[in-house]
Amino acid sequence: MTIVDGVTLLNFLSQIGISEDERLLVILNGKVIPKTDYTSTVLTESDNLSLMPPIQAG
Image (cartoon, rainbow, N blue to C red; front, side):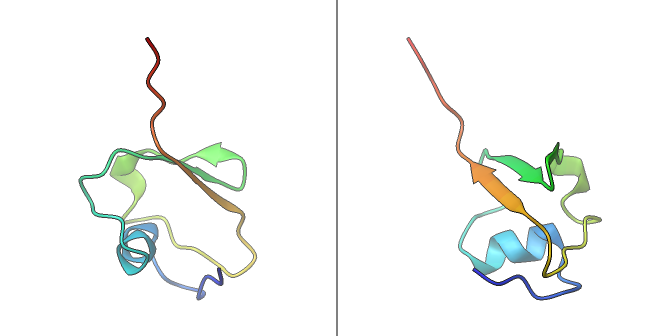
């Protein structure tokens, strides 16, 4: 998937159908991004973005 330069992480997640309330681990260029930073994190085309759902065991 291609990321358009300048889009915020929150807007990108919305564009791919992930709601603001969904629990998700976001790793951007090897660094975990806290949910509080989704609106201020600006993406670029060269970013490496990983999205992981929570894992429950037991």
